[in-house]
Length: 86
Length: 134
Image (tube, rainbow over all chains, first blue to last red; front, side, top):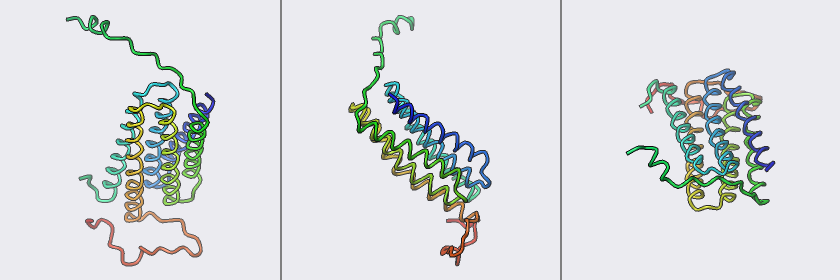
């Protein structure tokens, strides 16, 4: 199915652009933003992979990716704002 | 008891088969992936931190939810739909929260926004010093 190949290509290119912004980003805010975008992007990529392979257990991987991405973003911003996490 | 005997007694896992996609699912998945590609172009090209955050958060919510709905329609199973509904609700709840926290910590730690003629910073006056306990 060419639609899934095109979708995977778009998601791969956007993940590479997010990695570029994570490595280059002039301020730490850019890095945190690009990292948050990268985790969401990988979760969506895993969901499309689950559809392409027909292997529905990959959806749990996507759920785990999104939960870990949100938790890491919250911990990172709280640390950068207050100097402690909890 | 030997583990391999137990494994051999299990029924064979069914071979995953290729799904056929309807027109609606194809349109949703293609739309979502193009929207996410647009968000990443915005992250790369926009001038400062706040505009990059704007591009990332809003477009990712739209594109991700669209792709999730397309995949749930393509699978058409109850268990898959429940899990995708869980992921979608989690996305819709946490994407604004994380964007709010990133923008707030960036502003309070003093990241400078990109300014043009006519830019207004309404929160700038009467702001507590950074590091105060909120």
